[in-house]
Image 1 (cartoon, rainbow, N blue to C red):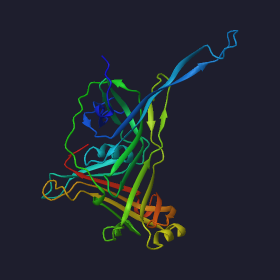
Image 2: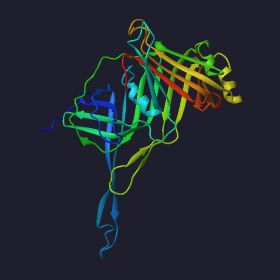
Image 3: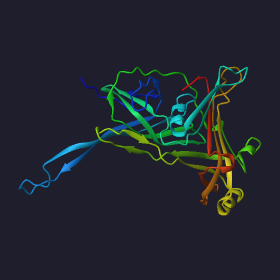
Image 4: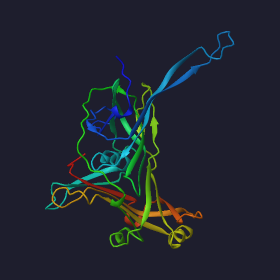
Length: 326
Protein backbone atom coordinates (compact mmCIF):
# COMPACT_ATOMS: atom_id res chain seq x y z
CA UNK A 1 0.00 0.00 0.00
CA UNK A 2 1.44 3.43 -0.91
CA UNK A 3 2.84 5.39 2.03
CA UNK A 4 2.90 9.08 2.78
CA UNK A 5 6.34 10.17 3.98
CA UNK A 6 8.61 13.07 4.80
CA UNK A 7 11.76 13.95 2.86
CA UNK A 8 14.04 12.59 5.59
CA UNK A 9 13.05 9.08 4.52
CA UNK A 10 14.42 9.59 1.02
CA UNK A 11 17.85 7.98 0.57
CA UNK A 12 20.48 8.80 -2.02
CA UNK A 13 23.29 6.56 -3.25
CA UNK A 14 26.11 7.55 -5.58
CA UNK A 15 28.94 5.73 -7.35
CA UNK A 16 31.16 6.09 -10.41
CA UNK A 17 29.92 4.03 -13.34
CA UNK A 18 31.89 0.98 -14.38
CA UNK A 19 30.46 1.01 -17.91
CA UNK A 20 29.44 4.44 -19.12
CA UNK A 21 25.67 4.76 -19.48
CA UNK A 22 24.96 1.41 -17.80
CA UNK A 23 23.54 1.54 -14.28
CA UNK A 24 26.04 0.58 -11.57
CA UNK A 25 24.45 -0.25 -8.17
CA UNK A 26 24.94 2.99 -6.24
CA UNK A 27 25.57 1.61 -2.77
CA UNK A 28 27.52 4.58 -1.33
CA UNK A 29 25.10 6.61 0.78
CA UNK A 30 25.24 10.34 0.10
CA UNK A 31 24.06 12.33 3.10
CA UNK A 32 21.78 15.15 1.98
CA UNK A 33 19.56 17.96 3.17
CA UNK A 34 17.43 18.03 0.05
CA UNK A 35 16.99 16.01 -3.12
CA UNK A 36 14.63 16.51 -6.04
CA UNK A 37 14.54 14.49 -9.24
CA UNK A 38 12.19 14.63 -12.19
CA UNK A 39 11.80 12.19 -15.05
CA UNK A 40 11.13 14.22 -18.19
CA UNK A 41 9.33 13.10 -21.34
CA UNK A 42 9.26 15.45 -24.33
CA UNK A 43 6.24 14.93 -26.56
CA UNK A 44 5.97 15.80 -30.26
CA UNK A 45 2.42 16.80 -31.20
CA UNK A 46 0.85 15.60 -34.45
CA UNK A 47 -0.96 18.66 -35.83
CA UNK A 48 -2.12 17.22 -39.15
CA UNK A 49 -5.76 18.01 -39.81
CA UNK A 50 -8.58 15.49 -40.02
CA UNK A 51 -11.27 17.79 -41.34
CA UNK A 52 -11.78 19.16 -37.82
CA UNK A 53 -10.95 22.49 -36.17
CA UNK A 54 -9.10 20.85 -33.26
CA UNK A 55 -5.37 21.64 -33.60
CA UNK A 56 -3.94 18.17 -32.87
CA UNK A 57 -4.86 14.52 -33.29
CA UNK A 58 -2.11 12.66 -31.41
CA UNK A 59 1.34 12.87 -29.83
CA UNK A 60 4.39 10.67 -29.26
CA UNK A 61 7.19 10.74 -26.69
CA UNK A 62 10.40 11.61 -28.56
CA UNK A 63 12.93 12.28 -25.77
CA UNK A 64 13.28 10.94 -22.21
CA UNK A 65 15.77 11.92 -19.52
CA UNK A 66 15.93 12.98 -15.88
CA UNK A 67 17.21 16.05 -14.06
CA UNK A 68 17.56 16.88 -10.41
CA UNK A 69 19.31 18.63 -7.56
CA UNK A 70 21.02 17.37 -4.41
CA UNK A 71 22.28 19.53 -1.56
CA UNK A 72 23.75 18.97 1.88
CA UNK A 73 26.74 19.40 4.14
CA UNK A 74 30.17 18.55 2.76
CA UNK A 75 31.64 15.38 4.20
CA UNK A 76 35.16 14.11 3.67
CA UNK A 77 34.44 10.97 1.61
CA UNK A 78 31.42 11.01 -0.72
CA UNK A 79 32.17 14.52 -2.03
CA UNK A 80 34.94 12.81 -4.00
CA UNK A 81 32.41 11.32 -6.46
CA UNK A 82 31.06 14.79 -7.27
CA UNK A 83 34.54 16.25 -7.73
CA UNK A 84 35.52 13.33 -9.99
CA UNK A 85 32.57 13.97 -12.27
CA UNK A 86 33.03 17.75 -12.40
CA UNK A 87 36.80 17.86 -13.00
CA UNK A 88 37.26 14.52 -14.74
CA UNK A 89 40.70 13.28 -13.68
CA UNK A 90 41.56 11.53 -10.41
CA UNK A 91 44.86 10.32 -8.97
CA UNK A 92 44.85 8.64 -5.53
CA UNK A 93 47.87 7.92 -3.35
CA UNK A 94 48.56 6.98 0.26
CA UNK A 95 50.09 9.68 2.40
CA UNK A 96 53.66 9.32 3.62
CA UNK A 97 54.41 7.47 6.87
CA UNK A 98 53.23 7.62 9.60
CA UNK A 99 49.92 8.46 7.85
CA UNK A 100 49.94 5.71 5.23
CA UNK A 101 46.38 4.68 6.16
CA UNK A 102 45.13 8.05 4.88
CA UNK A 103 44.93 9.02 1.22
CA UNK A 104 45.22 12.12 -0.93
CA UNK A 105 42.87 12.20 -3.92
CA UNK A 106 43.94 14.79 -6.48
CA UNK A 107 41.34 16.00 -8.99
CA UNK A 108 42.41 17.91 -12.08
CA UNK A 109 40.67 18.92 -15.28
CA UNK A 110 40.33 16.21 -17.92
CA UNK A 111 40.51 18.03 -21.25
CA UNK A 112 37.71 15.88 -22.70
CA UNK A 113 33.96 16.13 -23.17
CA UNK A 114 33.18 12.78 -21.50
CA UNK A 115 34.10 13.16 -17.82
CA UNK A 116 33.58 10.23 -15.45
CA UNK A 117 29.85 9.43 -15.33
CA UNK A 118 27.96 8.55 -12.14
CA UNK A 119 25.03 6.34 -11.24
CA UNK A 120 22.64 7.84 -8.69
CA UNK A 121 20.15 5.85 -6.62
CA UNK A 122 17.01 7.46 -5.18
CA UNK A 123 14.99 5.42 -2.69
CA UNK A 124 11.78 6.50 -0.97
CA UNK A 125 9.09 4.45 0.82
CA UNK A 126 7.13 4.05 -2.43
CA UNK A 127 9.81 3.46 -5.05
CA UNK A 128 13.50 2.95 -5.75
CA UNK A 129 15.13 3.98 -9.01
CA UNK A 130 18.63 4.13 -10.40
CA UNK A 131 19.71 6.90 -12.75
CA UNK A 132 22.49 6.00 -15.16
CA UNK A 133 24.78 8.36 -17.09
CA UNK A 134 24.41 11.02 -14.39
CA UNK A 135 26.48 14.13 -15.10
CA UNK A 136 26.71 17.24 -12.97
CA UNK A 137 25.53 20.48 -14.54
CA UNK A 138 26.74 22.55 -11.60
CA UNK A 139 28.54 22.00 -8.30
CA UNK A 140 28.61 24.79 -5.73
CA UNK A 141 30.63 24.70 -2.52
CA UNK A 142 30.19 27.46 0.03
CA UNK A 143 30.84 28.35 3.63
CA UNK A 144 29.85 31.17 5.93
CA UNK A 145 30.83 32.15 9.45
CA UNK A 146 28.57 30.39 11.96
CA UNK A 147 27.73 27.41 9.76
CA UNK A 148 28.85 24.24 8.03
CA UNK A 149 30.54 24.05 4.64
CA UNK A 150 27.80 23.04 2.19
CA UNK A 151 27.39 21.75 -1.33
CA UNK A 152 24.62 21.85 -3.92
CA UNK A 153 24.69 20.02 -7.24
CA UNK A 154 22.39 19.87 -10.24
CA UNK A 155 22.55 16.99 -12.70
CA UNK A 156 21.11 15.36 -15.79
CA UNK A 157 20.89 11.62 -16.47
CA UNK A 158 18.98 8.91 -18.21
CA UNK A 159 15.46 8.31 -16.90
CA UNK A 160 15.12 6.24 -13.75
CA UNK A 161 15.01 2.45 -13.89
CA UNK A 162 13.71 0.23 -11.11
CA UNK A 163 16.58 -0.80 -8.85
CA UNK A 164 17.21 -2.81 -5.69
CA UNK A 165 20.69 -1.60 -4.68
CA UNK A 166 21.30 -1.50 -0.92
CA UNK A 167 22.38 1.98 0.12
CA UNK A 168 24.91 1.95 2.97
CA UNK A 169 26.15 4.95 4.96
CA UNK A 170 29.60 5.26 6.52
CA UNK A 171 30.94 7.58 9.20
CA UNK A 172 32.27 10.81 7.70
CA UNK A 173 33.65 14.09 8.96
CA UNK A 174 32.10 17.51 8.42
CA UNK A 175 33.69 20.93 8.01
CA UNK A 176 32.66 24.25 9.57
CA UNK A 177 33.65 27.85 8.96
CA UNK A 178 36.54 27.85 11.43
CA UNK A 179 38.24 25.17 9.30
CA UNK A 180 38.44 27.44 6.20
CA UNK A 181 41.55 29.33 5.10
CA UNK A 182 41.54 31.58 2.01
CA UNK A 183 44.76 32.96 0.52
CA UNK A 184 45.90 34.85 -2.57
CA UNK A 185 49.27 35.26 -4.25
CA UNK A 186 50.61 36.35 -7.61
CA UNK A 187 51.32 32.68 -8.43
CA UNK A 188 50.28 29.33 -7.01
CA UNK A 189 53.83 28.74 -5.79
CA UNK A 190 53.44 31.62 -3.34
CA UNK A 191 50.18 30.50 -1.72
CA UNK A 192 51.80 28.41 1.03
CA UNK A 193 53.50 31.44 2.60
CA UNK A 194 50.74 33.98 1.84
CA UNK A 195 48.69 35.46 4.68
CA UNK A 196 45.18 34.20 5.31
CA UNK A 197 42.37 36.56 4.24
CA UNK A 198 39.84 37.13 7.06
CA UNK A 199 36.74 36.27 5.01
CA UNK A 200 33.17 36.13 6.26
CA UNK A 201 32.03 33.78 3.51
CA UNK A 202 33.12 32.15 0.27
CA UNK A 203 31.56 30.31 -2.63
CA UNK A 204 32.92 28.30 -5.55
CA UNK A 205 30.54 27.37 -8.36
CA UNK A 206 31.64 25.02 -11.12
CA UNK A 207 29.62 24.42 -14.28
CA UNK A 208 30.31 22.06 -17.16
CA UNK A 209 27.50 23.16 -19.48
CA UNK A 210 25.97 19.79 -20.29
CA UNK A 211 24.48 18.83 -23.63
CA UNK A 212 22.40 15.64 -23.80
CA UNK A 213 22.88 14.04 -27.25
CA UNK A 214 20.03 12.02 -28.73
CA UNK A 215 20.45 9.59 -31.64
CA UNK A 216 18.25 7.29 -33.71
CA UNK A 217 17.02 4.10 -32.08
CA UNK A 218 16.03 5.35 -28.62
CA UNK A 219 14.30 8.19 -26.83
CA UNK A 220 17.01 8.08 -24.11
CA UNK A 221 20.17 10.18 -24.51
CA UNK A 222 22.98 8.27 -26.21
CA UNK A 223 25.43 10.53 -24.39
CA UNK A 224 25.51 13.53 -22.08
CA UNK A 225 28.51 15.63 -23.01
CA UNK A 226 30.23 18.05 -20.67
CA UNK A 227 31.28 21.11 -22.66
CA UNK A 228 33.20 24.22 -21.52
CA UNK A 229 34.20 24.15 -17.83
CA UNK A 230 33.69 27.35 -15.87
CA UNK A 231 34.13 28.33 -12.24
CA UNK A 232 33.15 31.47 -10.36
CA UNK A 233 34.73 32.25 -6.99
CA UNK A 234 33.43 34.82 -4.53
CA UNK A 235 34.62 36.03 -1.11
CA UNK A 236 33.11 38.48 1.36
CA UNK A 237 35.16 40.34 3.96
CA UNK A 238 35.23 43.54 6.00
CA UNK A 239 36.54 46.47 3.97
CA UNK A 240 39.69 48.01 5.46
CA UNK A 241 41.64 48.93 2.30
CA UNK A 242 41.23 49.16 -1.46
CA UNK A 243 43.51 46.23 -2.31
CA UNK A 244 40.85 44.00 -3.87
CA UNK A 245 39.06 46.88 -5.56
CA UNK A 246 42.38 47.70 -7.23
CA UNK A 247 42.75 44.11 -8.43
CA UNK A 248 39.39 44.31 -10.17
CA UNK A 249 39.90 47.77 -11.68
CA UNK A 250 43.40 46.95 -12.97
CA UNK A 251 42.58 43.46 -14.24
CA UNK A 252 45.19 41.98 -11.90
CA UNK A 253 45.06 38.18 -12.01
CA UNK A 254 45.90 36.20 -8.88
CA UNK A 255 46.20 32.62 -7.70
CA UNK A 256 43.82 31.62 -4.90
CA UNK A 257 43.76 28.87 -2.29
CA UNK A 258 40.65 27.69 -0.43
CA UNK A 259 41.83 25.16 2.15
CA UNK A 260 39.20 23.46 4.34
CA UNK A 261 40.90 21.34 7.02
CA UNK A 262 39.09 19.75 9.97
CA UNK A 263 41.82 20.23 12.56
CA UNK A 264 39.48 18.87 15.27
CA UNK A 265 39.69 15.35 13.82
CA UNK A 266 42.77 13.16 13.38
CA UNK A 267 42.88 10.43 10.74
CA UNK A 268 45.61 7.80 10.53
CA UNK A 269 48.30 9.03 12.94
CA UNK A 270 48.49 12.79 12.58
CA UNK A 271 46.63 13.78 9.38
CA UNK A 272 43.33 15.65 9.13
CA UNK A 273 40.33 15.43 6.81
CA UNK A 274 40.89 18.14 4.20
CA UNK A 275 39.44 19.57 0.99
CA UNK A 276 41.73 22.01 -0.77
CA UNK A 277 41.20 24.00 -3.99
CA UNK A 278 44.08 25.73 -5.75
CA UNK A 279 43.15 28.09 -8.58
CA UNK A 280 46.17 28.99 -10.66
CA UNK A 281 44.77 32.17 -12.15
CA UNK A 282 41.64 34.16 -11.38
CA UNK A 283 40.55 37.35 -13.14
CA UNK A 284 38.26 39.48 -10.98
CA UNK A 285 35.20 40.71 -12.82
CA UNK A 286 33.23 42.33 -9.99
CA UNK A 287 33.90 44.24 -6.79
CA UNK A 288 31.19 45.84 -4.70
CA UNK A 289 30.76 47.28 -1.24
CA UNK A 290 27.84 47.43 1.19
CA UNK A 291 28.04 50.07 3.92
CA UNK A 292 24.72 50.68 5.61
CA UNK A 293 24.63 53.35 8.31
CA UNK A 294 24.74 50.90 11.17
CA UNK A 295 26.69 48.08 9.52
CA UNK A 296 30.34 47.19 9.17
CA UNK A 297 31.29 47.88 5.55
CA UNK A 298 31.57 44.60 3.65
CA UNK A 299 33.18 44.09 0.27
CA UNK A 300 32.48 41.26 -2.15
CA UNK A 301 35.11 40.20 -4.67
CA UNK A 302 34.06 37.88 -7.47
CA UNK A 303 36.36 36.25 -9.98
CA UNK A 304 36.42 33.81 -12.86
CA UNK A 305 38.75 30.83 -13.11
CA UNK A 306 41.09 31.03 -16.10
CA UNK A 307 43.69 28.66 -17.53
CA UNK A 308 47.26 29.73 -16.77
CA UNK A 309 49.35 28.89 -19.78
CA UNK A 310 52.73 29.02 -18.02
CA UNK A 311 51.57 26.52 -15.40
CA UNK A 312 49.39 24.45 -17.79
CA UNK A 313 46.61 24.33 -15.24
CA UNK A 314 43.48 26.15 -14.08
CA UNK A 315 42.47 24.32 -10.89
CA UNK A 316 43.41 21.39 -8.68
CA UNK A 317 41.39 19.94 -5.82
CA UNK A 318 42.87 17.61 -3.20
CA UNK A 319 40.65 15.56 -0.86
CA UNK A 320 42.29 13.83 2.12
CA UNK A 321 40.45 11.00 3.91
CA UNK A 322 40.52 7.31 4.79
CA UNK A 323 39.00 6.15 1.48
CA UNK A 324 41.51 4.23 -0.60
CA UNK A 325 39.90 4.74 -4.01
CA UNK A 326 36.82 5.91 -5.90
